Length: 572
Image (cartoon, rainbow, N blue to C red; front, side, top):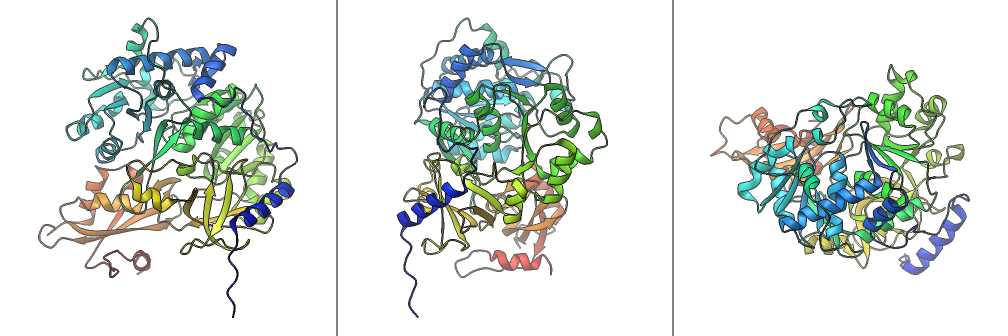
């Protein structure tokens, strides 16, 4: 039997472009437009500060920061960094939850040409210390409530410049919408750190060496891996600018658009939604520190929010909330959902449409490595086309991005309709993993990202996402990487070896389960609960595994744990 002929890449891509032209929603643009040209986002901020100085850039529980204020405050923050000795190319760790100071720090870092290195505010000392050491930052900007974690890592890191800030510096005296207790807490004195907002108020005029550019390193966005610890994805301002332009150009928001987001700003999706997309279009962002159904409903009603995004679970929680009927949702015109634990289906869409009047649409496919938002489903909801196609439908590539489906082992392009590895080529592709050339070479091949995700492109050109071949675990939509948990467990004196696999969970989607082999010499009497407690002190709560102590682990000839056999043990 003859072997099928290899598929030639250019022919394959040309065929896809023909299919895209037929499938493209008629009301959406196909060309990318840049309102202020292909310039750094920092120049977009300056343009809107000049054109719309009094327009709110960020509304935070009633506190308003205008475009002129955000531009000036970020200038002052760049000045502060320069005065502290930070230079172009230096990494600056940002260890904060959502707050206006995050925006000031982000744009100030970029203006100076330094590198934005966000760290999850849920991180414990082990996680923070690892990331600070990996990126080599000597400067950290932290919330006062997180300073105990910062102090814990000081002896073992190169940090020498500490900048602190507090919710109390920006919260209004009487919040206009319900605020979490952490945001209402009193300011904590931190004499060992520079107090950000009061110091900015003392700077008479901005003065710093301009370092912003499109193609220098602008951010290290950390993502995990299936082996070892998280990796820093190297991104530039051009990556950021392309991502927002390619998505926004499809259907530009009106000047009256008001966006709401509670997505964590340290997260790549939160960076897009909260920091990049609004400033590109000059729109107003209503910012929340975290998900809270009553706060979300109050904010939509009070500020006449026009667009937002949330997990499918969040949309269901709103509709089922006893106070849902008290609020006016009529301003909402654009709602995107992400299928983490619960998946978008026609029943959920119908209920939302009947109650709110808008159509829930899937946000689509993306990765930290590509700055996310690589495909779109806008305009594909007529007659529930997207949901009827497959529950994994993620649409078409945004302008300028290309997909192909390849064999995981050989890299050969597979025919349309075949399941294989999703490969992506896009202008926003990471420039590499920070200080990890081997991982970079493995993931980036001939200009294509090999995602490790399973998918297919159907005969009409639409992309379908089928799951992750990588071992990533999703706990309420948050990524948990077995390699990271295993690396930490390896530091426990009683643990000889460990393997982590997911267990399905009705409430959280998945939970990590660690099968642990105890060291016979150092682990006598060690219990699973004790190991779980040790983990809880060293990692974010959603990453803490259920621990099961075993007498042996199934291993390959090369010394790797056989994860498939561990998965079978879950049911044993």
